[in-house]
Length: 141
Image 1: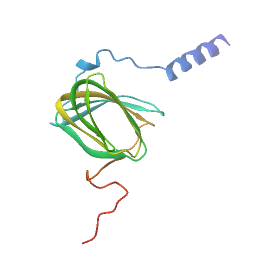
Image 2 (image 1 turned 120 degrees about the vertical axis):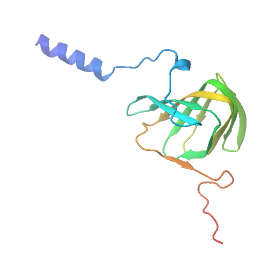
Image 3 (image 1 turned 30 degrees about the vertical axis):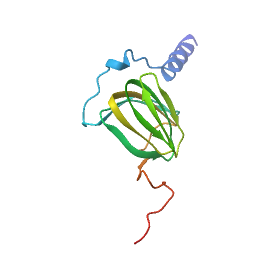
Image 4 (image 1 turned 180 degrees about the vertical axis):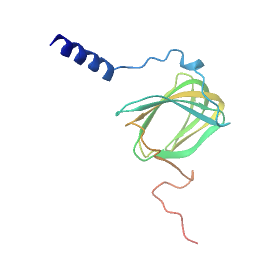
C-alpha cells in the first residue's frame, strides 16, 4: 500500500511539473531567419509560451483562435493593435484578443515573450492587407 501512495505522489508531481528558465534576455535562439525567430519555451493544454526575436518587424496579421499576450523584454518599436498605434519598449505588456489585426515595426531589435492561449496546436495566423479587414473579400475587377 505504501508503494501505491508513493507511486501516486510521484505521478502527481510529474504531471504538475512546472518549468523554470532563468535569464530570458540571454537565452540563445537559433537564427533561422533574418527577421523573426521563434523558440517554444513551454506548452500545455491551456497555453503555449514562445520567446521571439524581431529584427525588423512582423506583418499585419490576426489569430483565428488565440489570444496573444506579449511582454517586451528588450528593444523597441511601433505597434498597431486594431486601429491604435503606440510605442512599445522593454517592460511593455500588450494583450491582443483573438481576431484583432496587429503588427509591429522594430525600431531597435526586439526580444519578446509571447503567451498564446489556448495551446498552440496549429498555426492560426492569417496575414492580411493592412487596409482591408479580414472579413472583407477582395473586390472582383
